[in-house]
Length: 237
Length: 237
Image (tube, rainbow over all chains, first blue to last red):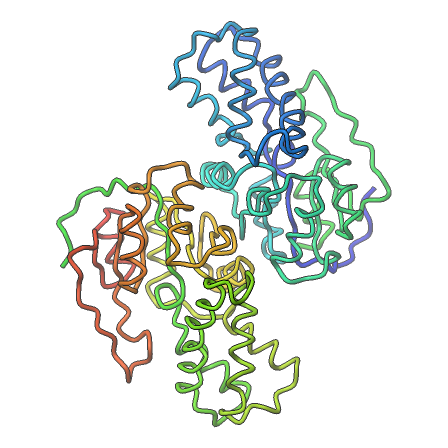
């Protein structure tokens, strides 16, 4: 699975966030149940996250103008509250709940793993989340990014090549010196098509412990690691 | 000069960089003299920096398309090498020297002051420097930004209102909850006109010890502080 140690030629590690760095499923469960005991947190989290790709597709197709994830999350939320008996939530509660995405908890290996990787590489986010969301999340969770990059900087959502190539352009390096780190094979495949190195991270419980995810390796990735500490081991950090 | 302690209502502190956070004059002197002993480092630094505003004005007027500071610095450098006897510098040396702006040293109070301010506020850059430059500088100098914001994000240079208002928009707060921290009264005046709070920082040696700068207070600023530690004192951090 893991290759014998060889220093990677990458200079910049760009991290996917939702699912890769933070556990959105457990965090959204917790947040909605804090607000209203008895709600089916698992189903609520799945429904909210389930609206994400269709909403982004509406932006990418031009049906919606450029829209930040905070606003897309709110549109999706307003569309699902009734089915979870949350239609009576006040505007203040809806705003608070919508910012739950700013308060997602990292996986247990993340803080230590990022600190190790940061000693040798420039570490940045590359997420469809907006800059404010990613910054608030990092500040609360103690994520030591060198730089917060987002779809908002490039005005395009992953998997648009403008995002992957944008990281290389920002740091003035060839695409092969950037590595995308993600728990999603489709994100990694799109990055690879742009010439980036790729590291797959296993997050079998991304959709909850009851819904284990296939984390089989794809030999097309440059690296495959159980978590961020295992990646740091492989990269000699 | 300083007001009695009162918690500021600001949530975000946005920092000007060149002159406010880092000592460009001494750093550029050092870099050029490392490359070629005997060059008049003071005059060279003044000439290079002197080309900055005219170059930005060419971008803002539309004469040049959108151009990163790294490229503007290189254009200015190529225009001044002959007068300093550096016309024979190799392309590799020119590239290295141009990235001196990524290796500027912070003023002595900066690291501790920022760490204190970060405990209570979101701290970000707001510089005309590009994202890669600001990130490389922060990594080398140990500047603990929560987020690196730049003219590159807003595709406008300060003092364009899009930059100051852009910080408020990114963090989804009213302009009055953002404070610009800078050593330049014109930058602060432009921020104030957009509704931001302002903090003036004295950097009397910005242009070198031999060329002391007027650091008189302007009562229009919300705060006036000798350095970042004094600002942290005033803000109760």
